[in-house]
Length: 615
Image (cartoon, rainbow, N blue to C red; front, side, top):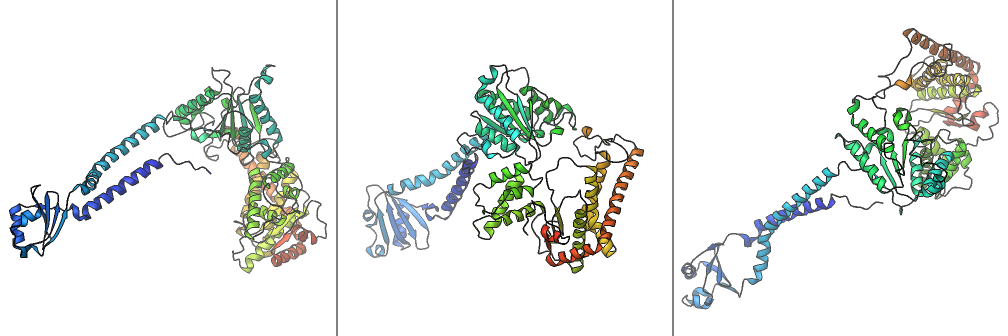
């Protein structure tokens, strides 16, 4: 934990102390009796008041005689230094003096320092106030002078290091980066045969796949200075600040060369020029121009490697991606099943797992999970175990956490009517039954009518293996399964509900992509709609159409045909297996959740080899 104090904390404490001192001093002067005004009288008046018995007490301090009248009024008179009180009062009758309360203090020196301190406090407060104002003005000047300075942070070598051993999966990416680290550690090995150090390395991949983690691993492995900064830290509201910070950043890097400079989320400043509304004077474009110049300008042999990460390579400027600037593009993609198992092993370090936990099985159940998702999964499993006061994480904890991460926590508190529960049960059974009867659909993993997140029920289907290519028949069967819930509602209850809204949205999206992007229709192998020329300012607002209105009508017709064919196939499957639909739905109403084994039991089939599922 970082315990460094904020820069402005001392100034704020000084201001608070100044205000409190001023308030206390003011209260002291207001309420302290010694600060009340005391009038001066002559010696004759003093003696006359004693004769008339108007004085109740007398206090002698040095050459001053303080007296208090019976009405509470205070006053003083000055005597000769050689005179004593007895000399002054010798003419006063003894009867008049015997009721006086007399107190004699030899000197006022005892109160000198107290009075000095009290009287000097206002002066000290004024001086302190001016000192505070000067410091504030000096800090403001320093901030103004450092406004164009780089905000990059230098990686601390003594801090806890992340190494390549902490990065599971992404073996190809690690090999590329290990080579970069070796280049910096042993440059002679490469330069001796004419090899040049790469100028830049661009890490590309979906969010959560480990791009920043790989950069931290490079920082931990490399025995050279490592600067890191986010792309958003360059651009401010003032013109020229971004370019100034880029210049300062590379100046720092050159002083520490050889070194590595990491820019996270570079798309914040590296977007294609001319695509925005600011033209050539846009602050972001000026910052990008400075980055381009620093990376590959007139200066050579800078011995600085620039690493950058983005999940939007399609919006980056072509000049930024050319060789000589970013010489290498490393793709950090979604992990496959083998990588997921390795990532789970990394994130299970320090977590006590039950001996029956099978991480290979968890890896099969998590297709499409990123490294960040898997880390969150193991953390949720640990939290689930701790909530029940257990010291060991079980397989059931992890599998329940998969459902929680994918679909949200169970919402058993959501109260549904009997009719709604029946509709949801038949809806989910319609999905599961049609998916089971179609060979290109993924196997049914679990069916539930327990609400999770925004969904009232869920049919969970998992692929048998990781897929990278999807066929036309796969999409057509998937459309049938998506329409299963909608058609089951119509066949059983004679009408449909809003529960199928998300299913219809997904089905329409798949059908339109089949026509416009995949060439899987009678319109032929043509791509309709040019994504490469979209301006990143709202896709629908600036979408580029490279087809006529006539083709647009044909596209709509083809999408309609695909949906209609899937609708007819789905309706036939559910009519042919109506009894089975009702049987499974009734069982689902009773149990609320059917596991894979429960579902396959209705068809008297054996579970697949890898399907080890617990409820």
